[in-house]
Image (tube, rainbow, N blue to C red; front, side, top):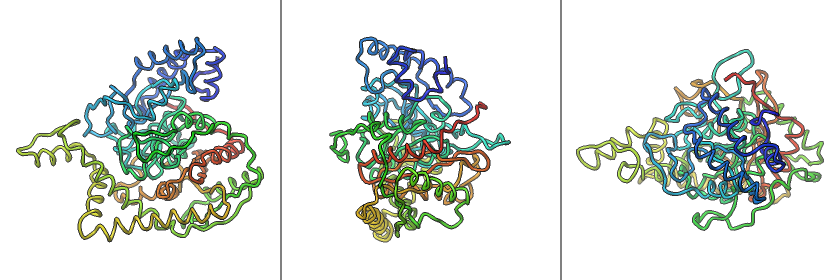
Length: 491
């Protein structure tokens, strides 16, 4: 029998339906793989007993012919999603041993459809980071290595544990959240597929908030088809989330294989940034050629306010973070460091509980929201955000179906290589991804090639609001042309 962890999610579903193996066998194979891959530090909490129980229940439903969309499929969950009775930390010391008494809407929908939880996955603390080096549990290691080197590389962030686990075969798929590129960038760094859905497509209820107007949950998987299958279960209206949109959930998997003939694909000239590597430039041109060969029409477009996206994002996101993270004060839940009075207790708790990157963003956010600076920074950033959104609206109004861009400015870099002296160096990794969050649009990262050192590189497709189906169709074309990528096992 093939190694069960190397199957795709779609193949696992077929095998379960044909009784080629059981959910318990799939689950045991993944639990064994997780044990052997601790060097990657992808999981911060493994839940083997719960996984076996869920797998047995799934096998019982499969035997009765009552299979859900994800019946018996083992998944990993980013440690930002509340899982009832299972520790939730957001990879921060401040939440300590918090066990939520409720389940996030997204995970409850996965369990409703029969999925099995293997454990909670590592991420940057409170999702603040582009390399998964800010986690209180230590950095996640990318399963990919440069040819001829054993240097440890970052998997990207903030959903680095999710990306690393999927790429290394430690789960068939995983949940992630994307605030400024936290699904698409790690997917590109690890050679897998990651989708950031339209804002409002997936419920945010029960997910630890970073920046509420930007955060969106989405799936990671090894293929476009697998990502589409996961998306069907994750999406949907939730009355508990006022930003959730009440629209029917399409059959995303059905969009694969659809003709892309006649589709207009925009190539934004503003994404040709100075200093872009020749490899990324070449990959971008190659992706455009693949879509053209499939019958799509390429058009050059302009998104003039792109250059302001990164600075505007790093005003809006920290501002919302400083507001959202005010609730972590040591009073009701999580860690508490006592002081002589309540103010000192707040100060001591937050100083001990938050890591340096989270403290930095809270301070930036509090500053831009403070009296005298609100208009100069926050209000101005929100005006820029409106202009960025209008740029996209104008392009889509001209008949453009989707936009093709690079996903990242480079391949994965080494742990400890960036951002130590200058945090802005790390923020520049989000240069191709933040516009999508600022405009609330869907974006998908699909592996499209490798760099000279054998590391995966991804391309990004940006779609119209709630038109993830077109992204799956186009992503499928790129995947069929580029082939799939797998890291050589070293762990």
